[in-house]
Structure formats: C-alpha cells, structure tokens
Image 1 (tube, rainbow, N blue to C red):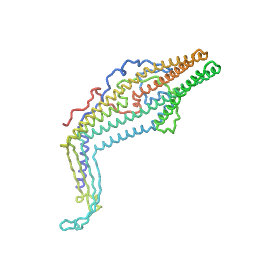
Image 2 (cartoon, helix red, strand yellow):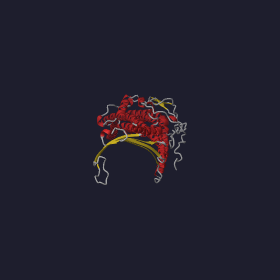
Image 3 (cartoon, helix red, strand yellow):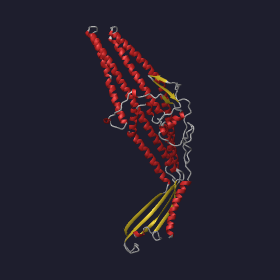
Image 4 (cartoon, rainbow, N blue to C red):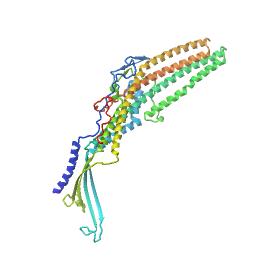
Length: 516
C-alpha cells in the first residue's frame, strides 16, 4: 500500500508547489499604472462669460448652479412624458446598446479565463489499445507467447507554469483595463443614444413650429390675395398686383413640403433609434408646448469633467491596458518555469485499471526552465512596440481630455449667449409683425403697392423662423451641455475605488527597459 501513497503524494506535491508559487511570486516587471490627475486650470472658457447670471428669454429662464449635479436620467429635466417613454423604449430595444452590453460581458469573461492560468491545469485520460506484435523469432514476443495483447491505461496529469515575473498578472491587469474600457464605451453608447433621442425630439418640435409658422403666413398671404382680387374686381389695382400676390402665396406654400419631408425623416430616425422598423410607427409626438427648458444647469469643476466623461475614462482605461502590456512584453523575454506530474495505472485487464498496486502503477514528476537565447530580436521589438503603444495611449488620453474641455467650454458659452439670441429674435419678430400689420392696413387704404407688402411678409416669415431656430438652439445646447458633462452615469452604477492620482503632464509613459 506504500505505492498509492507515493503517487498521491507526488501529485499533491506539484499542486502544493503551484499554489505556493502563486502566493509567493511577488515580482511584476514593467511599469505600474497610476491615474493622471485633471489639468490644473481655473477656467472652462477661453474668455470671461457671465456664467452665474441668469438668461431670460421667451418666458424661460436658465441659471448655472455650480453646486448642482447632473442626474442619471437627465432627459427627465425636460419634463416631457413622451421623451421619457421614448428613451425608455430605446434603452430596452436599441441594437447598438445591446451590442455594447455583449462586448462588456465578453471582456469580463476574458478576464476570468485569463485568471485560470494562476491555477494548475489538471487533466484525466483513459485509453485502451489492442495490438499485434511480430512473430519473427528475432523479435521478442509477449509474455504469453501470443502475438496479440491489450493494454488499458488510466492517467491523471497536473501541470503548472509559475508566474515568477508576473507576466500573467500583467495580462490579467490588461484584460481588466480592457473590461473597464468596454464599460465606458457602453456608457458612451448609452449617452450618445439618449442625446440623439433628445435632439431628435427637439428637432421634431422645431419642425412642427416651423410648419405652423409657414402655414400661418400662408393664411395671411391667402387673405391678402382675396383682398387683392376684390380690389382688382373694383378696378382699384391692375392684374399685375394680383399675380404678384399669387406668386407670393405659391412661394410660401412651396416651403412646406421640404419641412414636412424633414419631419417624416426625423420620426423615422427616432423609430430606428428606439430599435424598431419604420413600419412599426411612433405614437409619440413632440412640440415645444410639452418640452420644458431646464431652469437650473450644473456647472462642473475641471476635476469632475475628467472623471465623468465616458470618453475620457475609456481613454484612461486604454492607457492602463497599454501600461500592463509593457509588463507582459518584458516578462515574455525572461525565463519561464514549469512543473508537471502524472500518475496512473496500466494493465492488460480492464479490472486492474483502478488497482494502484506496484505492478500496475506509474508516475512522473518533472520541472523545466526555458528561455529564449536568440530569436532575431523578435521579443525585444515586441517590447519596443508595447512601449510605443503606451506612448500612443497616453497621447490619446490627453487628446480626449482636451476634447472634453473644448466640448464643455463650447456648450457653456453657447448657453450663455442663447438667451441673448432668442431675446433679439423675439424683438425682431414683434417688430416684423407690427410692420406687416401696418403695411396691410396701408394696402387696404391704397397707400402702398404690392411690392412693399411682399417685403413685409417675407420679413415677418424670416423673423418667425429665426425665433423658432433660436429656441431650438437653446434646447439643443442644453442637451449638448449634459452630454459634455458626462450624462450622469455615475448615479446609475458604481465603478469602484479610484486609483491614486499623479501630475497632469507627469504621465509616466514607459520606464527604461528591464531587459537589454
């Protein structure tokens, strides 16, 4: 009975050695990733903007609130049940969002798969073989003097590659960073989807307002045409004046089909974003009467912008992965240590396969060290490529930060001036309406000609459309600000503890090569 204990002890020894190697190996070659801090800047805009002042126009007021945070469901700030319903449907059905969710699950599974290399690989094998040997007198025969024999083998194999220099730990770290990148790409996909839905709803409201304005002008033009026809019948004007008014009415009506086409296409886009086909239709409608402009807007600090924007966090995770891959490339150039053991039984009788007595049992224990002596500088160049990849990822991170600050500054400045633009447009519309009313009265009295009336009509139409456009830009720029600030995803899900910070321009790109 001593032999079975010998086999068992041998296999337990290799398993114990593997776990000991996992727990004791503390060397991890390559640079350690440290999160860079935000840029040290005291202003988000390139010039002074009265961000604390309120902007009132068209009955709506907006004010920046530095102490206000952006909610996770920021689209609810527009207080539109239709928009809330549309976004909810899209979050459940949009295929791009589902694809990003699947990519995140793939990344997490790859992390767990790589973790498996920390443990010994155990396999079992059972085989049977029937063989005939030569019967020539010069060839040794089997013990039974029969040229036919059968062997049955049962074997257990344990193998382990010790992670002495931390190559596998660096690989796991890289995959974890890739999972983090996929996480923030998912957040970016969701933010892009909700922003596009909100902008589509605002654009639909704008198009409906423009169509209503054009139809209003068309009614005015038609009333004037009927007046001109009466005056022509009374002999007060000539046929040219009537033709001029008919042309003016036709010109206004001509602008309706393009707007109606844009409205139809806009609704098709919303249907597609919600994950449905155009034939499914959309029961929801949007207009400015059912969209409220958020009165209080958040104003983030620079440190908050780099922690809140998904694109910046994705770029940071990409830099983290590139840092870990430098360690992987260095570890690949160092010696590899492996342990293996196998044990089992072999017998010509199937009944003896599980008999661990001396005649039938066998075992092997082996250790190996391997290293590349010369490979044409392949591994060295791969390390150089990994270091260059880290340089690239660090530059991409800086670019993402610069872009994030630019987007935020653009949105803040746009909102600061939107109220002024809308206020000026409203004043212009009122003046144009007054002018048109006076010209219509003068036209009825025969004091002005048709050309003056036509100019007044065109001025009022353009002024009305300018008001709608200014109101649309105010809503759209508010959405752009919410997007620039990151969309509030941090209120929907916790991403875990933050790593230690370093200097903004003190990003360690790569260390001196460990192996020359």
